Image (cartoon, rainbow, N blue to C red; front, side, top):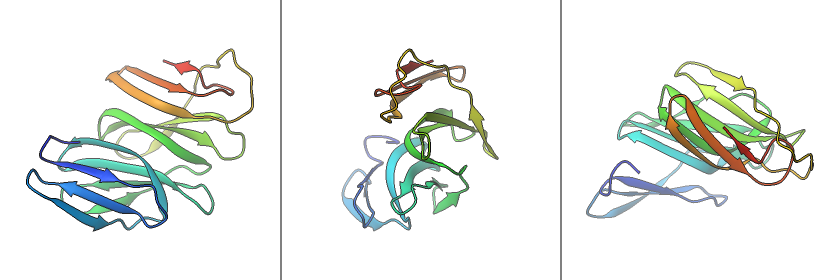
Amino acid sequence: MVSWDDFYIFDQQAEQQRWHWNGAAWSKQAVNARSTLAAFKAFAPNDMWALGWTMSDWKAEAFHFDGVTWKPVPTPPGFSVQQVTGVSGRDLWVMGTATKTYDTVAYHWNGTVSKAATLPSSDNDNDSGGGASAAVTVSAKEIYAFGGPGRRRSGLR
């Protein structure tokens, strides 16, 4: 959501759809994505992010909107996206689940490259999967992520 008269809604169906509210009317737009879009973050009308994963191989996908078009952004391999948070499009955190180990993973995007973050362990060693189901940015140095049961998935700061 950029403002009350400029926001988007994405669905998570096989045929991706996006709806845009311009303050007066809704418009339906197709999304050029093979993925299930699961996370969205808007910093400005020309700095929006939509992230998800492909259903066939659980590969993370990211798209950036520059005010004109949605463009794909390279993502690290081996995880599916659950959450995105940050203070700007050049200080973005993406959280998800590793596709082979089901551990929670986090990556920091600095506007050019993604770098894996080391997450603290929780007291829960359950291997049932999980990931970050919620994340919030307080400042550039204070991010909170919360998730379900499983290794490294309680509350992370």
